[in-house]
Length: 173
Image 1 (cartoon, rainbow, N blue to C red):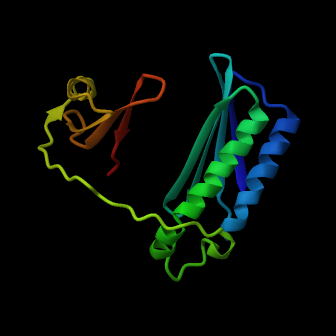
Image 2 (image 1 turned 180 degrees about the vertical axis):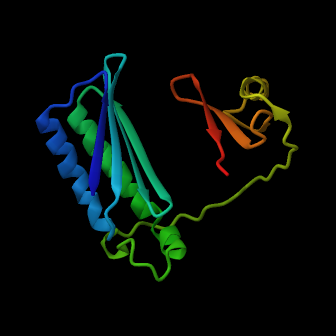
């Protein structure tokens, strides 16, 4: 596994880099191909934040942790990623049936949780700007809002982030 490390407002020592490489290399046993793990370390309000994303054949594993001790945060992020891989084991097996890109033998068994859709809504996609979509989301008191971007004519989603700011997801052609 190739680990791409990015630091923001924080200097990563050689020992820290080696620790991250070592911890994330343990996750590579789940994949037969070389994959990339993007790890971002940052300092926010006096606390250290670790974010990790792994792309594996169209499946995205992501975890983050904010802590005072960066080494324990790294352990938590690796544990979260490992748990995600276990939780979605059956989903990945179905998606990658007869594929040798993911090694499922090494994934620990976890009790299967049945995913249920309990409510369905239909609505019209109205053309609007991202700012208008945020206002609409706030009026509805939701955490996200799906809209048609009037500039790009693509579907977009605005959402409220944990830090109180907003994010925008845009589709690609």
